[in-house]
Length: 145
Image (tube, rainbow, N blue to C red; front, side, top):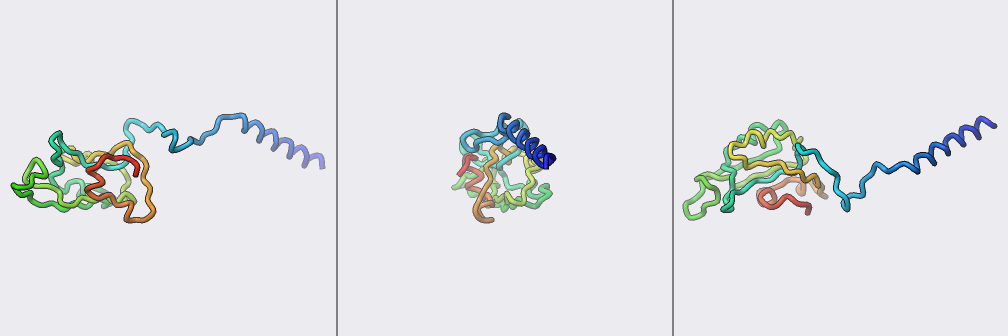
């Protein structure tokens, strides 16, 4: 009987000692976690100072992606509608954020530095379609919805 009481007292001592220590959890979203400088989060497509897309639709990011999470459809730009700084641009650009392993190979392979991985880590959705980032979402600012 005394062994049971001794074990109970030992457990209570451990519990009370842990109550005095600081917590490991962070009160998110009020306080954001600090991420490493090389952290790779949400994708974005960059534009130049004039607002033209830097993506020329070459498809290198799609070819180099080990998870096959990127889909690029390219076309030639008309003279009346300059979208890109070249005669070619990406009509459709999608990144499946569920499949993506955030390795950064798309960022390294891009010859125009159009594909960038930002430090934003808020990636959540209610359906699979919410987790497919299309071109307007990638061109916009990378912030939480």
